[in-house]
Image 1 (cartoon, rainbow over the protein chains, first blue to last red):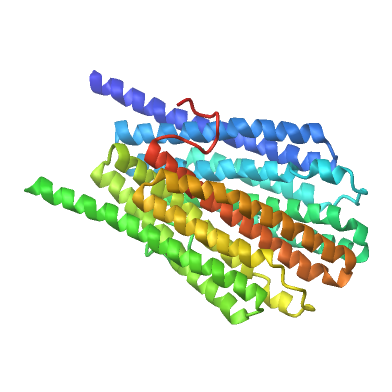
Image 2 (image 1 turned 180 degrees about the vertical axis):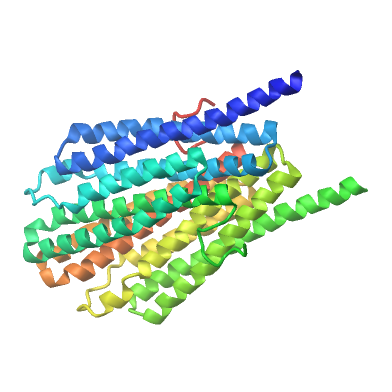
Length: 226
Length: 226
């Protein structure tokens, strides 16, 4: 009876861990969308909301870390549960950094709103949508322990890299042809760079899902003998 | 007798974990130095060496993760040892990303070597030195469990941010006054940005050392009640 009680507590801890990570995922997904929108629409109020929401994400990371430590200390998980808890410890760092990068995107909204407007680069909202979709799929794959769905996320990263290169060339062209465009075009360049790096963090999460589900480390090909 | 034997194996595992992390730290420290040098001196051979050394760092991360999983599964560490192992799981990710960022710095060495040379921005080597020093101090603090030394690393991050802002303004000025300088100045801008982000990863490690040594989470002020 006492053992069953402990089992139920253990299951509840693991479920709570899963839910907390998904909640944080939903929060940063909205932050990505709003950050890019605040930049393109010069909306300083929306930019401030992104920074405000990041505090929740930061608190979420601390809570996930504490929960993982408690599970490791009290429940001494083994096999796939142990892999899941170590996954959570590492993946939460990526989710939290995604939040930081969303805030970074908004950093210069106020400053750039005072510069002459540039034509909106179509790559940026497309990159943002792709990254949001990848993040959602990576966290869905995580909940279901679905390595195939996670592998599909990895394939989408190439599309984001391609959009980044287009945005980069577009910004460079603007700067060359019009020195007054330099500050705004640099701002666009950094947003594109941040979005590309966001996709890399999502990729890290997807790689961990594959490791968790298959026990195969795909992060660094050749580093691990199967 | 059997218990003592297990204790010795446990100590050996922890020592190995510490040594592996320090080894990786030394590797990425050299990578930072060589990456910036390859960019400033237009040395494509040195750039290739940085990418080559990154493979060792990637392998190191996989080894550290596996060692941590083994310790958690077989030794069931508690209290400060448990904090240390979870620290290693998270910190190794930062060290590995520092290696990735060093490689990113070298990414455009070949392309930019074909552009007209620009005056070397003095901020970049100074940023690189500061980041190398911070990384060395953060890992020293980690080995000794020295929270005060880790706190000193956090204070240095401001200096890197200041240098970044100077490099940023310098690059913008070059681009405005001379459209032909746009590709090279953009390259300098990205190197500065990468170095600033490198310093953020070192800061993460230092914050974890403080958490490990004091049991206080300084990452997100206000997120944790003491």
